[in-house]
Length: 293
Image (tube, rainbow, N blue to C red; front, side, top):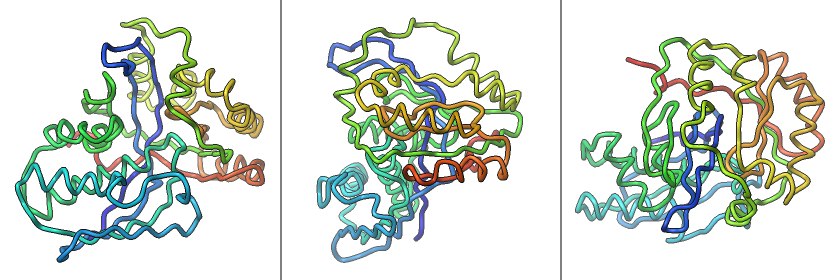
């Protein structure tokens, strides 16, 4: 069975304070994009993971073997289901790791959803999302799929159903630095105010499918800390803006920044101006699960 593991970007990311467990309370609009890793998952006599990295995006960034999130996802589903079935997994990487695009989490989410189908477990998306929080904070939103409101440390997720067709194109730009998420969070001084209008304004802009409004509503409370800690990220954001992107923000805790563009020709124009300065990719909103049925 071949499955896609779609990357995500955070259109908004609010930091609402520190929890008793040491994690930060977050509130974020998580948007899936068409950029994806590709997984081939087949029944096997032994669970194995083979990683293919044609674009050299993986080496030195993520754990391998049983510590990899893909393997943790398999073990989680074996335990939850009570099954002893094994699978062979070939993972072809296209999402840069350590870049705030949720690559490892997307891979784990894809494995969880695929094994739910392959093993005919019939566990609902919301229950799967709750189960997946055990192995990673970003995973529940990617298990649920579509445009998602993510809260808490990432374990509280709900799908944001957009009535109108939302058709957005983005340019992703990664300057090639690996961000330490704990370091970024440790540098966050102020926090957003609970009940702020950041979320409501973004959802309204998405409903209207208004590129200019969406661009103006982009928000990431971690960006200023990341820009200070890693000047390369600040430079990448400036390059995107100078190249003509309508709205620019950072996803997650970095290091990838993204710019909203008008259309494919505009995206290519922006890319041509910044291609020499790091990994750059044109992508668009993945709409397979983000619309009401």
